[in-house]
Structure formats: C-alpha cells, structure tokens
Length: 386
Ligand code: COA
Image (cartoon, rainbow, N blue to C red; front, side, top):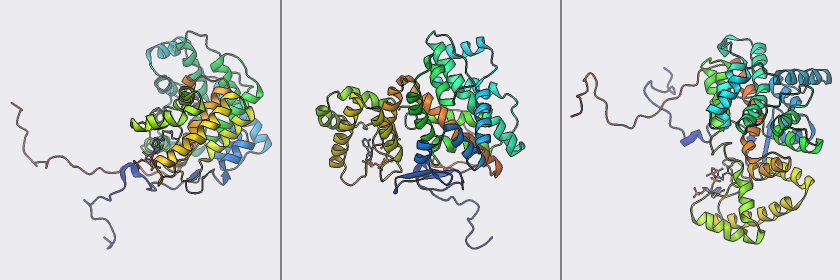
C-alpha cells in the first residue's frame, strides 16, 4: 500500500448530496454556475437552442459532432420511424388506466419497446446507440398516448414525417399547431436536454454501471426526474403568476409565502450564481410571442427578485428555468399537466447520451454509507422481542 492510499475500512467523507463532488469524467457538457453558462460538448447550449434543430443536437450528443446535411436528414427520418411503436393498444390502455401518473405509465411501457434486455455492458457502442435511440424516440409516443387515454380521448398515432417537437404537440393536443408554437417548444426541448450531473442523469449512469439493460437505465432517469425537487413541479411557477394576479400584489404575496416558510417557485438554483441562461433564453422566446401574460410575468419577475434580494441579501437568487418554461409551454398550447412529460421528452435524450458514455468506459458505481446505528454484536443470535 502506498503512503497516500486509503486504509481498507476508512471512508472518505463528502458533502451531503455529493454537492461539489466530481464522480465521473464526461465529454457531454457541464454547467458553469458562476459564469451563468452551460454547454453541450464544445458548444454553447443556448446558442444551439437558438440555431440548431432538436435532432441535430441529439445527434451531437450521441455521436460527438454536429451531423452533415445527409446525416441530419437520415437521423430525422430514423427518429420519426422510431416514434412508431408496435405495442398492443389494449395493453397501453390498461397501463394508462392502472397508473396514476404519466411517469409510472412510461416506466411500465418503455421496456416493452426494446424487450431484448441485453446487459448494456455486453453491447457495442453502436448497438447501445441504436437501442437507446429507439427507446428515446418512443417516449413522446407513449406519454402522449397515456395522456389522452387517461382523459378518455382517442390516441393520435405518430406522424414520422413531422419533426419530434411538432409530433409531440400534435400527439398530445390532437391537432397540429403553428410553426411558431412548434419553434417555442423546440427551443425549450433543446435547451433542457442536458444540464450537468443532475439527479436523473446520475441515476441513469448508476443503473447503467451495473450492466442493466438500456430500458432499465432510462427508467431510473424517469423515476428521478418525477420528483418535485427535480422536474416534477414545473407548473408551480405558472400557477404562482396566476395567484399573484396584479403585479402590484407581488411583494405582499411573496413576503407572505416566505414568512410561512415556502419556497418561491422559479427562483433560486443550486449551481447558478449568475443568471440561469435557460431562463434568459426562454424569457426571450416568451417576449417574442408577447401578450398580457408575458408582460405581467416580466413585471412580477422584477418585483420578486427585489424582494428576494432584500430577504436574503447575502445569497444570489436568480430566476431559474422553471419561471419562463411554464409560460413558454403554456403559450405553445400545452397544459400544465404536460409540463413534466415535455421535460422528460427532452431529458431522455441526455440520459441516453450519458448511458452510452458510461457503458463505453464503465466502472460500477458503488459508494459506501457511514453506519450510525447501535454498535453491532458479532456472532450473537438476536433474542425474540418480548
Ligand atoms: N424561495 C425561498 N428561499 C430560497 C429560494 C426560493 N426560491 N431559493 C433559495 N432560497 C434560500 C435557500 O433556502 C437558502 O436559504 P438558507 O440560507 O436559509 O439555507 C438561501 O436562499 C440560499 O440558497 P442557495 O444555496 O442559493 O440554493 P439552494 O441550493 O439551497 O436551493 C433550490 C436551490 C433550487 C432548491 C431553491 O432555490 C428552491 O427551492 N427554489 C424553488 C424551487 C424551484 O424553482 N426549483 C426549480 C429549480 S431549477
């Protein structure tokens, strides 16, 4: 043993929640909180969302470079084809009615799209990409079908000739929407594909590291994302704007909420200490659309930030992605019950890329926990409690 090696029973302590701990190397991207910047590979993620199609960015993350025109066209076609899933309609309806939330239905149905169940670590890189792309592309189809079935509406099958964002909206709403609305949703989807080592990305990589099959690893991401501290509550910022109503009510409303110990949704971030660039992008998208709600949201945002500065003068509390995400998705015609599902449609692309990266250079993730219970007795059979 070298002098700086850890003795066999010693544990390294890390901060709660692994905050600030690097647990992997990645070439996929990162978040630079103090600079208000995040990127996908070597590209500014916000600039990609402004200029590049969702499927081209998807390709970038899966293959390492932006596609040529020919690769772009054939990938768009492949994704469209993969949205068509061959599942028994009765089974989908049964799962939709037996589950209480979209992510539960998705976790039940997704494995059926690629039921082969090969250990991810036994596959080649190309095989992982093919299976991950099949599953990733099927996510909007399954979410839209279960969403509509739960409401007693007929399922709208995918149209492989449409773009991924356009078809997601059409399959959920039952009708095509204007190119402007599609562009709003596409900007949101592209901007939210990946964002550092967030909980759902980590969960996907942990499950991948065990050699579990691709669907099992993606389901880990779906489960993690569904929690309200991650992707499970994006509609709350929109309902806050609704509740505040007149902007002049903002200060009173926010102080009341803070006084009662509540968080103000859409504000604050664990990593950003400068503006959240996703919120700036989505505010820009909302402003381009314009209208009373957007004007009111902008005024309320300024007032909330002022109260937060006064309330926590030593903290940097910025507007986060959720504040304008709800507005943009609402303006595009999506209802709040579809917001978390829409987030899943984009983030699953990031999970798939992380899965391919993890499996390509795998080491099982197996940390330890510090035992803090009563001292164990060795070799003593427990007495039956009286
Ligand atoms: N409402 C009320 N208090 C907030 C706040 C908010 N939106 N955002 C931060 N704070 C408080 C924190 O609780 C912390 O208080 P403390 O010093 O008493 O512990 C202080 O401001 C500094 O917080 P910070 O360290 O910058 O962030 P964090 O890691 O503790 O919290 C969030 C980050 C995202 C959990 C937090 O900002 C939050 O709950 N926001 C609202 C929910 C939301 O919009 N989530 C979507 C995130 S993309």
